Length: 553
Picture 1: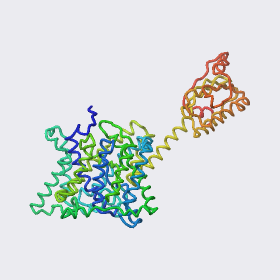
Picture 2 (picture 1 turned 90 degrees about the vertical axis):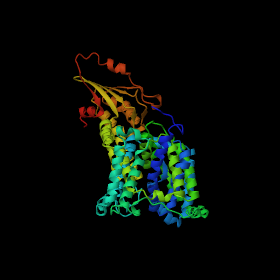
Picture 3 (picture 1 turned 180 degrees about the horizontal axis):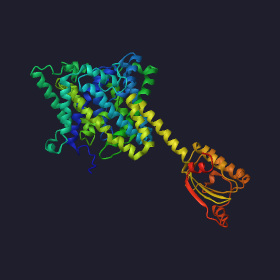
Picture 4 (picture 1 turned 120 degrees about the vertical axis):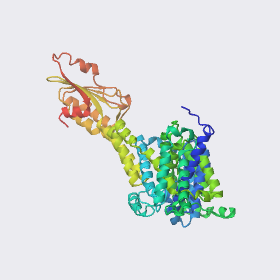
């Protein structure tokens, strides 16, 4: 496998992938800006900074940054609370500064603590969301804001009601364009078309959608798609008018404490979302490369500082565009830089051409992208390979992200994943082997690698129920950590309870720092049973089996 990451090692595919991502990014940037109540150009500017500046500075080969749906509610509320977009831009600069400092302090390592089942669940959920959100656009119902990834949409509908409501607004032309675009995307992967696959499927789908709609328009068909169902970019009549779309921050805002509070909130949310997306993008990378979270935070921080300075929305790494980038054949960060450059050039010089692209064509591209993320094979793999303990956090993350939003869903998935980790830890404090004679037992308890306070109850019950006159070996040679409370129980048992019940005990493998009592060796305990002339009944297993034998469970 070719693992070269030189910027120009995959120029042709990276350039075409950048073009596909650019076409997808245009409506997303505009839709998020609209949802935030910000100037439309602020969304485009954020995409430009995310593509060119962060694309250049980032160590990620495939991540695409831009305005994020996950920040929509925060940004919309902050603009209203701070009184103006110009003051809000100061908060964006504060967020960028905080992110840069977090990167310098190496806070990016937090991404290493997200379980893979939660990351896989997030990816699958995003795939489901993309499909659900794009179905209305595919049939010509464009009321909700493109890029709004919350269950409750800015239009007041929720994800499912928008789909049901779209039935009342079916547009035959949009449906045909979406179906044609989907067909092109599916057929384009066939080996028979290998000779023309130098043209990316996403771009071919867009061109097919534009041609179909132009055919409707030229024939005077009622199926022709109107401007409200197409990409809509601002079209300034002069360069001066174009420059007037940029907004500079009101630097007096730095004197407002609420600006700093807002900046801190944006920095935290944007950083978490970026680290999640970077982790997910690395999982999707065909070359399986690793991205430093610390370097990414520094790049994002510089990017957001520039966003605040030129009048752009705050940016994060965005999984929708990143996954579309990968699916389009990108292999280096040249693709995200191409996408940012195209945003800059086309918005400045040829916005009218882009306004001929039907949203239904872009919906088709995103539906295919979504399907690849939530392919049924992913669900089957998680169940088959991980079992219930891995599948439960995975599926709960999927459902929670779909029904709430990215951060809330991932947070719930993390809680569930931690619950299962603690549950498993609590249920496996030790393994045992037991030799049962008529009047005596030899029980060897081998403690687990980690014995936490959650194991306290089961170990206490086991020691309290050990039969009188038995011989017990507690082996900690494989244990790295024993909680203080558990050690206290073992010490108390060895010092007093074992003597009271005439139990011959041996404590083996305990570290000196644990300060356990001196006892007989395991060899002495075993040798004391050698004169018993009978074959014992033997058993072994986990702690639940022993507790059941002792009459506890």
